[in-house]
Image 1 (cartoon, rainbow, N blue to C red):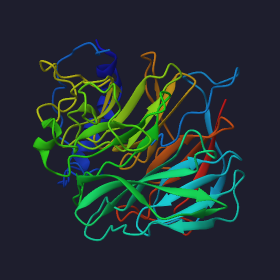
Image 2 (image 1 turned 180 degrees about the horizontal axis):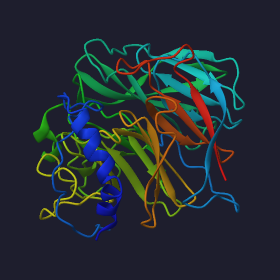
Image 3 (image 1 turned 135 degrees about the horizontal axis):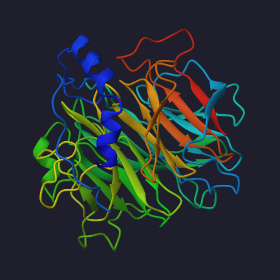
Image 4 (image 1 turned 90 degrees about the vertical axis):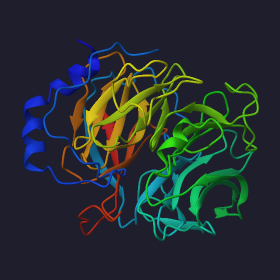
Length: 388
C-alpha cells in the first residue's frame, strides 16, 4: 500500500462520518471545495521522484520529523488577513495584509505592529482570494534592499519589487504581469530558492485549461531571476515555466537538501502536497490526487478537501508543516514517508501561513478575517510554534 493511501485510510472512518454530516455544496475555490460522499480511493501507485522566504539553516539540534509542536506565545493580534511573511536580519518580520495592501513589521519577540508602507494599486474588490499576497526579501538583503510582492490589480496578478530601506517601503517596480486574476485561484506564494532564483506560484484563475497551456503563466510555478527574467536554465529556454498542471498553489518551501515542495488546493476530492521537479506536469485538470496518468506526477500526500485546503508550507527537521484553512489544523508531514499528523485541530480556526523563523520556531498565522472564518476579538493573529 502506498504511503499516500495510508494517509487517507488512517482517517477513513472519521472522514466518512464527517462527509456524511456536512455534505454541503462547494464553490470549488481554495477553501470551499465540496467534499465527496464516501467513495473508493483512487488506485494505488508509488510516488514519483510561501515558504515565502529562504529557509533558515537547520541547527545541530533540529527536531525530527515527529517533533512535538507547542504554541508558546502570540506575536501579534488584530491583523486583517495576514498572508505573506519575510524575515529581516534582526529576526523581526515584514507581513503583508491581503485586503488593505499594507505591509507591517512585527518584532521578533512580538509586540507593537508598525506599518511600513502600502503597495499602491492592490485591489481585492470583487475577489475572494485576491489582494496583496506573497512577499519575499532579496536573498542578499540588505545589500540588495528589495522586497518582492505578488498581488492582484484589476484583472491581473503582478509581481513587483520595492526598495525597503530605513523602515519604509518604496514604490513598486513591476517585473511580471499578465497572470490572469479571478475571484478564486490566484495562487500567490513566492520565495527565493537555494539557487538564488525567485519562484512564483500561480493559480489557474478558474480557467482550468490554462494549467496545461505552456504559453500561459496561470496554473504554474514560475522560476525567475531577481530581475524578473526567465531563469536561463529553466526546462524550456526563454520560458518562465518551471512546472505545470497546478490548480491553485499557496505554499512552497525547500527542504534541507534543496528540494522544492508545494501544497495544492483540490477541487471536489483531493488536496495535495507535491514534490516539485523541473518540467514536471502535476495533472490538473485531467487528474486530481492519485491517478497514475501517463506523464503526470502523483502527489506525495493527499487529503480529502475537508481535512485540509492546504496553504502555507514550512520545512524543518525532515518534516513539512502545512497550514490548513478549511481543515483548521497544521499538518506535520514526515518527508521520509511516515504518517502525517494533524496538530492544533480546531484550536485556532483557519490557518493560512506557516514559515520557519531564524530562531528555529515556526510563525503561524490565522485567517479568520478572510470572509470565511469566525473571527474572535484578537483575530487575526500570528502565533509562535516551538518544536521539541
